[in-house]
Every structure is written in C-alpha cells, then in structure tokens.
Image 1: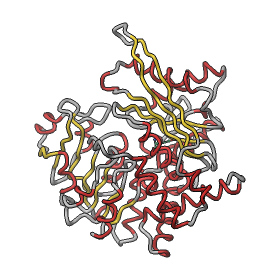
Image 2 (image 1 turned 90 degrees about the vertical axis):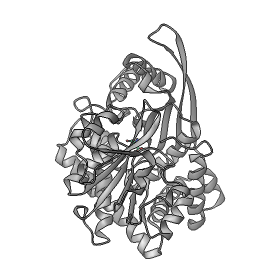
Image 3 (image 1 turned 180 degrees about the vertical axis):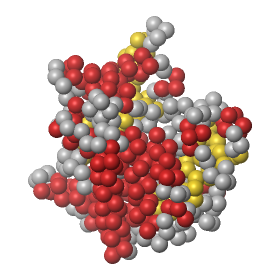
Image 4 (image 1 turned 135 degrees about the horizontal axis):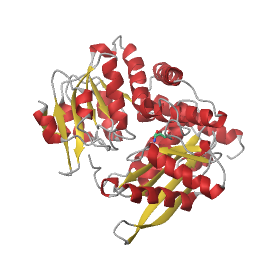
Length: 429
Ligand code: GLU
C-alpha cells in the first residue's frame, strides 16, 4: 500500500483548501494564513541502539492552526515519512476538529522509522527523545499529541512520562490515547473505527438503507479497520474482502471469503501492526487475491482504512459497478482527480476528516476526563461519541443538500468557515 513517488499529500491538501477558499471567497490574508502551517519543528533524535551503535532518527511536529483551541493530532512512526505528509495531515486535523465542533486546532507529528525493525527499548528511546526535543513547544495548553500510524497507548505513556520528568509534575492532559487506568478513556481504542460506522449508518439512512442490507470491502487491518469491521458486523453488515500489507513480501495482498470474514479468527493470526499471516489465512479457507483487487469486489461499500492516495484516478475504473458508497477511514485515501470520477459514477464519498473524526473526538473526551480526574463509563463515552458524530454528519449533509455540494465540499465549507471566523474574531487577519 505504498504511495506513488510523485504523490505529494500537501499539494492535495492545499488544492482542496484553495477550492474551498474560492467557494467561501476568503480574503488574501486568511488564505495565506490557512494554506500553510503556522509553526513546524524538525528534530534529530540520537538513539543508542541495542547493538551499541548510535543512530540518528529524524522527526517532525507541524502545528497547522490553533485558532479554535490547542493543537491536536497524532504522531506517526513510518519508514517513508515526509514533512509534506505531516504538513498535509496537520491541516486535515484542523478541519477534522472544526467539522465535529470540538475546541481544538490541528497538528501532526512523525518520526522516520520502522517499528517492525525496532526493539521495544529502542522505540521507548525514540519516544522519549522526540519529547526531549519538543518539550518546550508542545503541552496541554498548546499542543496535545495522540496515537497514529504504528504508535499506540504504550508509546503515549512513555512520552507522557518523559514530559512529566522534564516539567516536574503530573500533566495527564498533555497527551491522549493513554492506557486505561493511567488517564486513558474507555472507548478510545475503538473510537475511530466505531465513529466511521456511526457516520456510515447515518449516510445509509439518507438512502433508505441500513447496514444490515450491505456488504463491504476494507483496505487495511490495523486498529481503525479492525474496529470499523467489528461494529459494522455487529450491526449486521458483511465484510467479504480485506486488503492488507505483507511485511515479509513487502507488498499488498487481499483475502476474500464470500460468506463473510470471521474477525476473531483473523485477529488471532494478525501482528500488532495489522499484518495478517497470509499462509495461515489461506489454510483457514480465505481466497488470496492481489492487494489492489479489494476495489473490484462485488460489494456496496468500500472502506479504505490504510494509507493516503490509494483510490487514484487509475483505480476508479477497477471499482465494481455495485459500489455505491466509499467511507474514508484513512486520511487522504482518495486522489482529487478520482473524486470527480467517483461523483460522475454516482458513488457517494464520505470524506476522511468527517468519517474518521471519532478518534480525535474521543481524545477530546479523554482530555476533559483527564483534566477533571473523573472518568466516564464505557457506554457513556460511546453514546456521546455517537451523538457527536451523528450531529456532525447531519450538519454536513444538510448543507450538501441545500447547496448542492458533495459531502467533501460541504464538510470543508463548514470546517474552513469556522476556523477562518475564529482567526478573524481573534483579530489575526
Ligand atoms: N491520529 C488520530 C487522527 O488522525 C487521532 C488524533 C487525536 O486523537 O488527537 O485523527
């Protein structure tokens, strides 16, 4: 599921922004402020490796905009990380927080590294090193990190611990995605995946459909994809194909089972990065197919929940005629040229920064709970998440219908308008 070399997500993010800036007729100063990040940090992190050698890792934190509140966004560990990817993702975080109406801005961080080839101790050193470099520039009132691609609650706890050592106190609101019992919120692990399905349920209602009437193909089998599948199946949907990255072969492959995949069975043969053991899956009766074929499956819904730039203009022709909805679990999975072709085919695309905002919404709940030092039961977290996601979808959908916009454009108009107004009201532009 690698991204093509020519693809630059920041160019895509800026193109999307420019379109909306025109629709909203934003003035020059606001455009100039919002089409670039406000601040970015590039750091070098020297690590003593297990073999005794010292290796230097490059890391980033990009703060796109904090007009609505402290910056918020995940930190990714990825071997192909680039600062432009982080810039794009930080901008998408600003729109994501804005569209769901939470009082937070947008940021994203990353380290160029591959956790598949790092021991736990080496990963801990990278987490602590990243914090040491950035401890003065991030914090509970200015920039709050969270888990993202190949980072989890353990990474967040190491980062929190380092931050607290440096600042000499306990700051549970500094980071989200912490382990439950150490300031984490119940429901945070499943929040992004579940949020996707709450939004999907609402989108289907608009077309007089319910999840139980549908089938889906999913790209990815990490935390987000697994939890989306979990709730989708609990609501009666059938997942027939999963596309996933094969670390050993360094390529994507897909697994198909016409009568529906068994989530528990596949989880048992999956590593913590979402890599399914291909040989074992075949023995369990899954049909192996090329990774790109997940798009061609005869289903109603596609759920890209892996990486950026997966549904390109070229890929649209391979999508099965039956597909009517794409719900973007990943950030930036659809190329802008593909968007137009999908619309021309009558496929409804539910945009990433609305569809996958459940993670950051629950992070916001976690911040509130951490700051109050009072924690909510699981069902309260999930029902508040459902209410939040449902309201956000309905607001976007109403605007889309009343102004004849795509869901992506409507979500953008709402999100950018709120941030632009906040910048103006603060007297920045
Ligand atoms: N990394 C997640 C995202 O892209 C969550 C961010 C957060 O919780 O701050 O939305």
